[in-house]
Length: 149
Image (cartoon, rainbow, N blue to C red; front, side, top):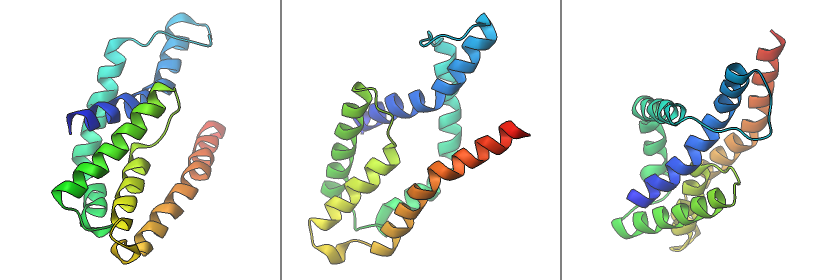
């Protein structure tokens, strides 16, 4: 659990703070560079808001990924966390931004499949995949409209 939290923090804090760090660099220095030092306070700021988001809305994701996707047992949960953690750490080390939630969904689905295809809620998998497909264009549309306004 601690290593999964480490992987989650290493990846998601970086993904969420990077745009803010760029804005801070331009605001504080008045210049644009290809790399910027990220102040520790900015990482703490991102971590605090990540915790607030988890507290306010995390229960919905936890409920969905809990026993709705596939049956969880302690050993299955360990395998799900281990698989997702290794994946996130490898990609974070390589500097590739990925979604820890996608990794958890993939791990849970794979662990569910280990007991047969009937152990996975395929309707939920389709809903999750549809959400993944919509994420990039919706974020782009929202950002573009915000910039336009």
